[in-house]
Length: 132
Image 1 (cartoon, one colour):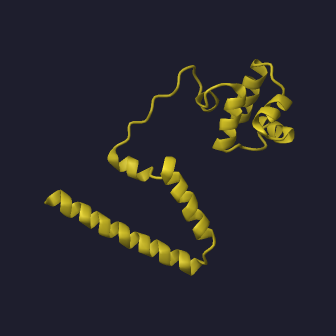
Image 2: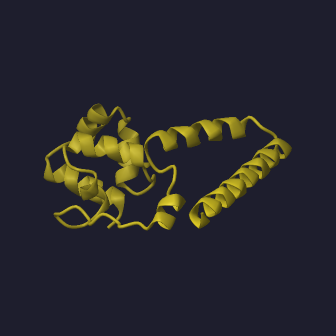
């Protein structure tokens, strides 16, 4: 089921109007309508506001079923790939994006090259520590 359809079904099941959702989320009513009709796909922050307005956990919008989905069990390798997906790391990535947006292509390339070298150096240090 599409997210917009799901949002409409939950809202209607709770006997709420689009205007009530608008008031509870701070979103304008035409945006609420566009989402419910599938013309706009809301981001995660918007879905969190919607879940709060509907007084339901976010997973009920994103998943079918009555119970929350099982959490993923991540290996250390997968955890490294997901770095930046929460907390302080998310804030750091946001800052980095802001800095990158103010740079030209040459400056961005230089920064990426430097980051690559630093990561390579750290992997070598980690390897030496593991072998010691």
